[in-house]
Image 1 (cartoon, rainbow, N blue to C red):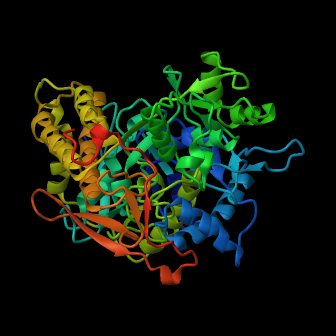
Image 2 (image 1 turned 60 degrees about the vertical axis):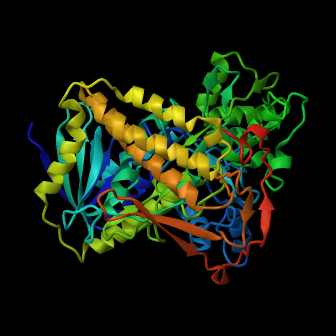
Image 3 (image 1 turned 45 degrees about the vertical axis):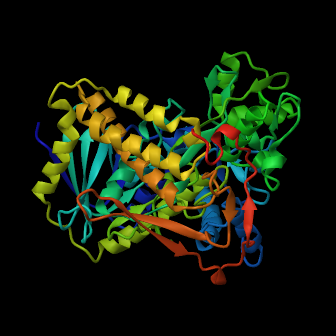
Length: 586
């Protein structure tokens, strides 16, 4: 099958809200734009499960901005880039207003006024309820009307560089994609590439997560992009209900006033997060539930019995998956409490990935990022319900604008056939020989390592090192046995290989940060250390054959920012069972 070749000014990878806004802005400024989506726009990815978007109820300006920045800074454990936060608060108002003008049906009061509500992580910041799928359908129509070329069912499997090397000393020159049903190769030559690839998770069959496994992250890593926040790459959730079913919409459930209670009926979240309590982040709530269970006060429950019916109706309106799940399993939230089953895996929580500046640019010329597939510098480590979708729109808009401006000063680079061949040989390798291992079996091996409670919940240097050893053994001894009998399985093989690379990078980053902060809890450093760790940890792939990560820290310049962090060490609130304490045999 002959490969298809494309030339463009701006190649957008990923059809979520950040990718759509990037493509629309670049096209508006005169660029030739191609948007490539692994699945189908409005039918897959995080935006299909978005139920509300961060939406300031007014334009925030002047001294009032400091209070809004403070909300993000505290929620992000003081690692948020306050320049990004201020930009986000200002520009999210504009982006949402544009989407209102385009007909996105945000929730409204009976009198027709927009219904702004609070959500986890915010006491000032407001959100608007919306069905993410409907929002993306409207953006898809605008993309077509604007003349953006949309190519779906094509997975971008690697980036191309001007010098033909990974990592590169040059710039980004395009990307390689493969049609996931037919295996047809697509080669895109582009002056700029904007990655809007979403989070990375294992195959946990959780909502939108199953095809977001880190392929875009790994591609950016291979070309030498700086990564930040990888030590915080732990995804947690608490919405496994009654040992029967999962449902997304956790932020919205919290937003209508959910209570978390233990078996004695006691609300416990204020003990673990005195600032946000039941509006805390997913990871914090999951850890708190686990701690209550460990200390004998579980099982724990979600209690919505006190929530007014009108708010339950609003929850169902903007989160129809919650309504369907509750109806299917016979749950009446005004009468029933639901047992909670939390879990923790390696994956994106607040932000872990390529580090971007205020224009969405990475350290590699021509490579941009937007959305959940970046380090999310407005969060970095912490909580913000519905903070990702609107931030994706802001970052995507800026990346599209900056890429369009850069287009005027650069030319398309020639392709390097050897680099293309190297990628395709790697991608198609699992089809070339019958082997004993299928992708699903590799995921099971990964799960055995990441779900071990000593590693997942009670990390120490020794336990992290042991996890790295086991992950690297899987990469060295099991991945070469991977077999894909068809193109669908071939893409699954690519997903698991890329996820494993990101999981190993995550563990190595965890070793570097010698404290507990946000999603990272270390038993051997059970405190948040604001004297020594008010800094970002950046990683870059080394130029040696093994590509070992090279780490460095970046001190945060609080002299320029309005919100100042407290100094000293703050003990972690999480209990450590004796068998998992430092020095135990486990």
